[in-house]
Image (cartoon, rainbow, N blue to C red; front, side):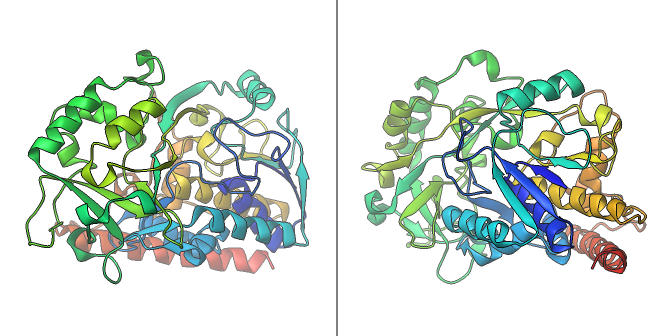
Length: 435
C-alpha cells in the first residue's frame, strides 16, 4: 500500500496499516523538497500552534475525538500524550519531541518503507493521498485536473517568544477557572484599559503582509488573524483571545484584558502567544506585540505567518470512507478532505486506513455514522452541500440524542458515552478481521 505524505494524517494511516500486517511505502518529499510552511526534516511537523485543543472527553467535541482515536490505537494521540507540555485543559505538545517521537516510530517499523521523493501524480490504485493543505505544485496540479481540487482559504499561525525575554514581573501564572494541573500552565500578561486601547489602535494601523482582498472571504474563521478580529470592534479581542474571564491577579482582581502564553516545549524556554495568529509584517509584529507590558523586550523566535490551505470539493469526489468515488482503492486524508485541525486531520488518516485495511482483507467496511465524532466528520466531507467548507470537531455534527436533555453538561456526557460505546463496537469489528 502506498501512502503519500508524512504529515499527521499520512503517519497515522501508515502506522495503522503497518501495525496490522499491511506493508506500506510511505512517500514524503522532505528533506529533498519542502513546502513554504515546513522546515523540519522530521515527519508530522506542526507548523501552526502546538496545541491539539481540549482534552476534556466529556465536555468538548475535540476532547471526545481524541478519546475515540485513543481507543482505536492512534499513533498521533499516543505521541501527543507522550510529549505533552502543561496547557491547562488542553493537550499541547513539545513540537520537536512530538515530531521526533512519530518519526522514530515510523522509521523503525519493519512494515514501513520510507521514500524521500516528490509524488507528482495521484496513484491509480491502492493508495492514501495525505499531502496536506500545502501540496506541492505538480501533485496539486494533477489533483486539480482530475478532481477539481482548487478550493482554498488562508490559515495563520501565532508567534513564539523566548522565555528569557518575558518580563515575568508583569505577569501572573494561572489557568482559566483553575482548570489546569499544578500551579498553573499559562503565563498571563495583563493589560489595563489604556494599554489595551493603545494596543488596539496600533493593531488597526499595522501593515499586513498580503493583499486585503483575501481577508473577507477566504480566511478560515477558526484561524482568524488577530488584526482582523480587532477590526470587528474595539472590544472584540476582550471577548476573544484577550478575554479576562476566569483569571485573577495576585491581588484577586480581574484584569481589563489578558494575553495568555503557553509553553512551546518541555524545557519551558519558548512560549506561544495563544490565539495570536497574524498576518502582520514581521517588523510590525515586533512593534505592536511588544506594546504588551510583559513583552516589551520580547525576543521573537518565530513570527506569525499566513499560508494558503487547499482542500477538495470532497462531496463531489469522496465517499464517506474517504475513498474516491471513481476508484475505491484510492483514499484521501487530512486537511485536503475538508476536515480542519490537527486532530481532525489525523483522525481522517486513521479512518481511511481502517477502511482500507478492512477492504484489503475482504471484510465488510466499518459502519461509521454520526454517533461518533470520527463518523460525523467522515459524513461531513461526503455529504452533498451547496457551500462545502472545512469543519472542526463539534457537537452540532453529531446525531441528536433520542431523549430531550436540557442540561448541557449531561448532554455532552451522553454524547460521549454513546460515541465511546460505538467505538468499542468498531474496535471489536476491526479486531475480528485484522491481526
